[in-house]
Length: 424
Image (cartoon, rainbow, N blue to C red; front, side, top):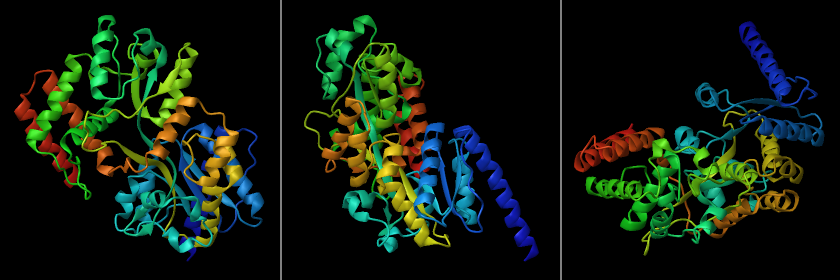
């Protein structure tokens, strides 16, 4: 018993030190919370902006709930996932925690890794979420997390560049090839993207033209060697006809410096890039999701950018539920958060955000596209963000386009590597 108490005191002291350090980073005048025997623990990762408004929100929650105290545990992303994995395994995770979408499968494929929020529906107002929204956070029929906002690979363009060449904003792959015919004389690419969005774009093309999903619902590869050959040939054509530059060579500066006329990226990233582009005197617009002529499937996916979950080991689920309700549905919290995580999923929070936040038109357009196309966008299979899959895919496409491996050998190796990555 004595050793247990000592350990608890040591942990509390370390947590206080970390918390004070975090507060100094967010705001030198931040008022520190008094320690209590059993405060609610809230964990998240992010930038100073996210730290600042979440700390303010935690303080506001305390003011609205006398006697309840919140201990905030936060850091930048680097190292956070490793610490979270240790906390989940050791059953020491925070009462309420910000989680990544793929963590639902990593820690709770059977629905038992996090608290079932359906059991707390008398406290958490789930009517603010559509059935499809709740489905995003379900595993095995249990509501493990509530999505804060959605993300998807979307397309933003430099309107001035497309106007300069007398081109409409692309809607199809063929439109991109036509744009390349006009722009390539000036060494400008119609579109650029980094490796994750490149992979998702190739998945979209494959699904649109084949009518097959890249991965099955249970995460198995659904691509033959012949299918992979077609994907490789299409990518090679994109490179040869100057639609996109080789993926390993592209950086965001290519878009900001007008070397590329468009970019495929997350909605959240687009808001940041748009500000930078407009500082250079240009206008960014949101385009349609690129499709093939006579597409057999939509091919594009959405995912919750982040979710809030409750620890299955929390000793006070009702209080944790009150905090969760505040974080996702409270109007004052919505004003504090704005669109830093994206446009809120909660209807109540979204209504406040639309009135109080002056977001750019291209960002509103992208969010409306997600909302209006819920029936088209499927929830992303988490294997589509498997880093080993994406790494293998880029390495394989590089081997092929740089002539280091034949089409047949490269396709066979890629199928083998991706299958191994998802079956580990």
